[in-house]
Each structure stands twice: as structure tokens, then as C-alpha cells.
Amino acid sequence: MTESAIQPVSMKLAEADFDAFSRDLGGSFARYGFAVVADHGLDEAMIRAAVDDAKTFFALPAEAKMAYHVPGTGGARGYTPFGKEAAKDADVVDLKEFWHTGRDLPEGHPYARYMRENLWPAEVPGFRTHVKGLYEAMDQLGKRLLVAIARYLKLDDDYFEGPTALGNSVLRLLHYPPVPADAPGVRAGAHEDINVITLLLGAEEAGLQVKDRTGEWLPISPPEGALVVNIGDMLQRLTNHVLPSTTHRVVNPAPERRGYSRYSTPFFLHFEPEFLIETLPGCVTAENPNRYPEPITAEDFLLQRLREIRLL
Ligand SMILES: O=C(O)CCC(=O)C(=O)O
Ligand SMILES: [Fe+2]
Image 1 (cartoon, protein in one colour):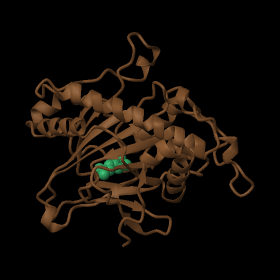
Image 2 (cartoon, rainbow, N blue to C red):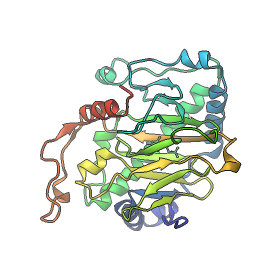
Image 3 (cartoon, helix red, strand yellow):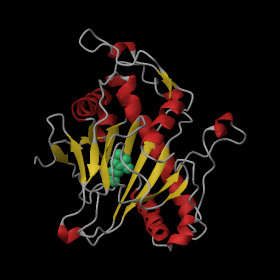
Image 4 (cartoon, helix red, strand yellow):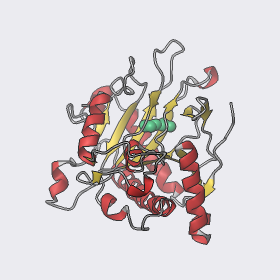
């Protein structure tokens, strides 16, 4: 297998030459559906505090954690236990548990119809401050990356601003417990992300693999602290597959790492629920005719997909 086939793109380049940054970033997405982003500027202490809180939470007894599980809500907020989510069309469930934090909407906002209020675990005092801080920092960074993507697609720089301003984005704190040698299934079965783009921290612990268009599984081994960013199905659909949503998975550890947990934190950046995903005219050509003549709202698309992964 090819080690680190995906060359990191530094955000320092974004300050020096935004056109060049957007070309490198967009080029990596067009080729792999993934990019590795170095020098992203997220505060390390803030990340560590949030991840430490996640570790403290996951170490609580199952009954304490289940107090934050809300059945029938697609795991949108709070805790989803081990053995619940499965990749689309998979026979076995993933070997993971997770916590979801969403956007705190302005008081009385009509999107409260779609976006539930956050839950916070009383057992971990710093959790709310740290995790909310990380959510907001990831949201800002994601929006900056979308400016580069807009430029790559020859759209106005602010194209994504309105559609994502109060996006239904979710920060997922993930815990993959140690894996017994005879465990059925894998940490995360092969899947595509549903949303616009995903910003992933914590992929340094081995396991994440991307299915290259050659059919080969490429291991992603980002440099320490770098961010792995990928295109989700909503952006793939909007761009008529010019930016592909690539299948990925998290495989079980090698025997010497089996006894260790893996923690990672993807931020799933979403559109606002009522945004209409309608193929961009600039992404339609004679060789790539419009694959989606019917537009769909982000909310309808999300509900359809949550049913497929057994969260609804
Ligand atoms: O844990 C990881 O490295 C990836 C997680 C992932 O792909 C997901 O939660 O969608
Ligand atoms: Fe994923």
C-alpha cells in the first residue's frame, strides 16, 4: 500500500496565496475526495481539553451514559451507545460509541423545528465550555475551507456563506474501545459521509483508510495535529461528482494496538436544513451530464440517509 499518498496542504499558503491554496486543496479533493490540511491554527490546548472531557465521559458507567441517549432522534444530540450505528447496507454494527453536539440556535429561531437543543453531561464539568468552543472553532475553519472550495469551483467566494450560516453541523466525539481478536465487524465499516465537508481531528492513531478510485485502500496517516478533510454526499451531489464523496472506513488495530482505545473527532459541516441542493450549472458538461435533475432539500436528504444507517 502507498504510505501517505495524499500530500498535506498547508493553511499558511492560504494567507500567502489564496488562489494557490484553493488550487491545491481543490485538486486533492477532485482526485481523492480527501485532503490533509496542516497548520490549521486550531488551538491545541482547546482540542486537548475537549478530547480529555470526551475520554472522561466515555469512561463513565453505561447507565450514566445512557441517561444522555435519546431514542428515535437519529443520535442528533447526546450519546449513542456501542452497537447502534452501522454503515449503509452493512450486516454488522460498527465498534464505536459517540457523542453529538450541534449548533446553539438564537432564541426562538424557526430552525428549532429541525435542530434540537444540546445536551451536556453534568458529570464532566468542563465539557460544555470546551466542546462548544471546539464546535465554534471547527465551524469557522470549515467555512474558511468552503471559501477555497468556492474559488476552486469558480463560484463567488461567498457562495457557501448563506447556505451554511446556521448549518445543521454536528461535532462527533468518537470512542472506539479496545478490540478483541475475534470481534465481528470493524471499528467503522466502509461508508460515505452524508454532509457537505467533514473536518477530522485525531486520525493519527492508525485505522482510517480511503478507497482510491483505483480500488486500492489507502491508509491515511496525517502528520501529528493535521486535519483530515473530506467531501460528503451533499457536496458531491451539488457538484455533480466533480468533488467526489469517497468511501472510507476505520479498520481494526494491529495485534499490538488492540488493547488501546481510539478517539477521533469529526466535525460534519452541514447546510442549513432548507437549502435546496440543486446541481451547479458550472459542474454539468457533455461528458458529465446532470446526474440529479431533481433537487432535494438538505433536511430531506439527511433524513433519507439517517434511515439507511439505522440511526432513525
Ligand atoms: O474515526 C475516524 O477516523 C473516521 C470516522 C468517520 O469516518 C465517521 O465518523 O464518519
Ligand atoms: Fe466518515
